[in-house]
Image (cartoon, each protein chain N blue to C red):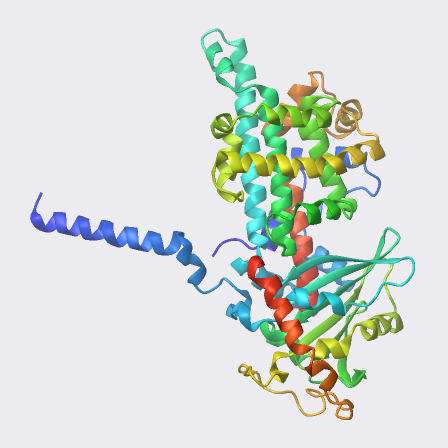
Length: 295
Length: 214
């Protein structure tokens, strides 16, 4: 039997690079972020009671719900996992390219990796698509309801806002610069369907995207990003996010960074799993909210 | 290679392919474990038909729907930016254990059994089939406020959704609660004529919403 959502929550790290990076970014978001890794704490927080018998009932119900395939909670997690794997693959490739660029014999590897910015733009659009698909899985809407998704973005509070701030900073502002959101559409426009197929990020996600074939998937990604951009623009303006502030916030927890911003983004991509980490926490919360209502 | 060995390998390959096809191809959805409590989704009332029955938010409040699944619908009641409560309606067909807690309840609200769970949750069992629950969030709600919220749901409308009340459908293996708890005590006076005419409309609607989503 595979792992339930709450077991995944309890296996999340309490303190590592991922947690530190998220702590750093959360200083930019009012409301803050707590690394919730205890199922019992989460249940008693939602239920407003620490009666062990009630908590046990909620937990049993949550496990039953997460084992049912039709309910979509585990499918939401597999989306986050797929994105995480692709992020690691892309990050690893770029770290390799950076290292290999310095060694004369393997220099050719560096020229084999795809253009970094395009790769990054596709990675971001895949993450936005994963967020939307996971949202529809957890909320029970059909798979391409862009409008419902973009209106729900306004309802994102505390933890979810930190999650989106991390997405904007780590995957847009740091690697692509302060004008990232305005350049994104242009960058995605340059991705042809053949090129998309060659990206490691896409391979893991392809089976999870609605539609058949690269062209349909590309259209889906661009529409998703389009809806997300409208909201993200306001979000960045409201919090005053930019790459300088993001770096300073990260330095607060990770220590001083002397490299460029793009290297920082590559480093974070290759060695942290912020997206899957917060994803598991978000899905677990929704699942517990339902289980508490059903016991 | 001996003839028998070749046959053996061939048969093994075929068996492997068949097993693989059964577990990994679309047949998967036919296997048990796909739905909650292994109860077929068509037996469960769809969450989209619950949405209209939630209380109307008062001035300064906001009702934001967060989940809508088979047999479940949930919304947050917000005042400004603060979440005051989680409101939900669920079909207890997939959670028989949740019905049993109402067996010993002495309180009633609009003649349906009422139970308080812990310090922030209150639940109501309507028509022996639907659980309505209010869970206080953040600074919390007191007992009085939670019971008022429960009363603000469209409870007669919810009771009318019960498929057991329709002549065509057959109630499926559910043991009845003692009299007076399974049935509302009062509503005998005003029978379900007004709702009876509405029932087909609900069903048609819920089915229409369902098909693409399922």
